[in-house]
Length: 381
Image 1 (tube, one colour):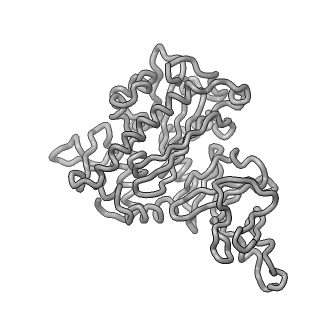
Image 2: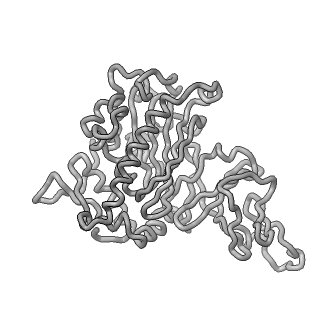
Image 3: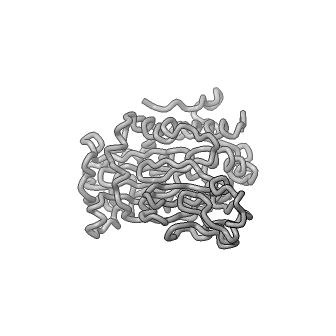
């Protein structure tokens, strides 16, 4: 079963159009994406285990808003706009940290508990008419899935199940399949942050196709030989790319990795599955670990990507060397991001004013383009 591509041109059925170059360079397009995509859909913000203790916090940029995520004294995660209700100062100025009981604005010392309620301010006792709940921090919707906190800034968030969870069901063809990897129970083995000088859509498009794999991914195609033929793992529902016959594990040299995760099935063993959760998450599943990318689009030509390698807790606790499995996908990341950075300058060229083309192996990227244009309200590119 394959996804249905956008209809090709009668004149050139092998080629369909991409988005025009301005969609990758125009600050106004990026502003619309911030409003209608990143601030309207569920956004994967932080790994729950990064906020292990009550009082731990992390700030993330979601569209035009900065969001602070905290763990309360009773253990729940909460998300708020990172804005003091008094004069609008940024409440938490560090990317991450830990407080004992409350969040205090560094400007005028308005103080909020970890549930967002205003609890103190200079001379507050002299202002008995101030409603401490009404003037608490602005809450942001939060859901936990795969061990990560997903936030949504929309006043009425879309169904989490019909958007985020559905992406895994749509790709794997089985609602239970992703659960076999137990991602929420895995431990962080390595995290690498990449500052990519390219538009976020170029990164998504690159991840969605493998037409480039034989050209720039020699290590990956050695482990997954069918990728050398330009096959995209996401294109066929329920199918994972199979390891090569002589390959023992998903490692940079094809050597053995770690024991298969306990609930991974025989059908999932020795296979790689890739899932795109629009707009900004990639999930990569292999028998002994999971690799999860979160993108943070910061400008029309800049995207920070945070990539986590997750393993069985006993693997991480034992101090096992994970470098060979990390190195494989780290090289893939570097190769991909360099390709995206090579592409970004040409998006402003007159040669790309009307865009480029997608060959048949890439036609499914057209579905991503149609999805985006629908969100932006553009009837045509």
